[in-house]
Amino acid sequence: MSHSEASEAATTGGGPNSGASAGSASSSSVQTRWVRAEAAPSSNIRFSITDQLFLQVPAVVTFFYDRALDDAVLARGLEQALNVVPVFAGRIRAVDGELQIASANQGVLFSTARSELGLVEAIKSVAENRGQFLTEPISPSEACSGSAPIFTVRVTHFSDGSTALGFWWLHALGDLQSFMLLLRAWSAAVAGGSLSPALVMEDRPGHLEARLPPGGSEEPGLRLLDDSELMRFGQYLASSSATEKRLVQAYFADAELARMREAYTMNGVRLSSNDILCAHVMEAIQACDPEVDRRNLSIVVNYRRLAGLEESFVGNPITGLVLECARAEPAASMALRIRSAMDRFSQDHMDYRATVRFVESIGGTKSLSRCSLKGMDPLGRHVSVTNVCGLGVYDVTFAGARPVYFATILDTPFPWVTMFVEGFENQGKMFVAVLPTDVADRWAQPAMLKRLHRFRQPEDAIPALAKRVGCID
Image (cartoon, rainbow, N blue to C red):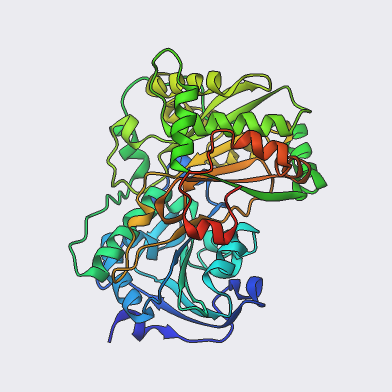
């Protein structure tokens, strides 16, 4: 008998804090079980400063497949994958007054459900920010208390034979690249292939200190909020400025992106897709929000490759690259400035050590609750963008089935949070943003959409599924 079968606890109401209620009109009874590694050593894993910033932040993603996946096969494959990345089956514990991951194979909450929706309707529910029923959410506070898991899986079978795999994990555990190490091992296990090892370090801060190159920015990636700022932020979160928000999307075809790159290239400087997309959508957002003449654009940077860290390192080696942008600045100029800043990232923006020194100077990690990420200021209507393209999400196959769509669920407490992911069937790019309702209304105006897609041509290839879902604006 497998570990998952031995620990199965089938219910009709889902697991702790089950997401079934969020989609009660769309999902039937939920069955849950615990999945554990076949064999995994116990360890205590120390958080880095960056990890600790994400102790109350969940990460939520969903993969959609156009065919049925076998629950039992998936569970057995996950057991094997957890041998490689056992930290996902751990729990948060306080060790000598410090929160750590106690990785002792406590288990992953694995649930299955059925829905009367079809594939297209399910994807639409995510586009309309109604896709919470596709995951098994946990309260971050409960996860941090050690009373709940830090990673959950929900398999949803739809009426047309398609399947969704929804994932929830505590961001402090690791970023999306860390998560993809587990997913690739899981996919390989189901296929009967070899599993690539992941680098799970017990002393994450020590590893970063030893591996990161000397130098870097002298400016920390955090700032300390005074009492008045904390009060204003609390008032903001309770106000309509934070609560009146809406999800918007835009699909950019590959040919459209090629024309965009050609139009924005200046002085022979080669621009990345991230450079042009960040500049293009920032220009559009600023046009939709004329109240602010200057605002920050904070680009989340995964610095593994830039800093010489191992690609298999499990953690959160990320920071924000912050640029001030004027409303009148054209996208081509912005793209060039983004490229210049990225080219000098290691020298000018690699701020991990400066952040560690800053946290020590303000009394240690107990003061992190009074800190804000540099460049993230929803009161100032500043924009944060994360690009998760290039991580191979469409290579996560199970029994020959390849994802037809990958989605992040941006359930944020405030607007101005945006993200890029690969588009339908790994074609093009999808932009997803949570914006204030008034800005989202302007975004949806025909004139604005025409401006946003000024590089699109009628002959551009757009996946059939994208047309069926209606996410091509």
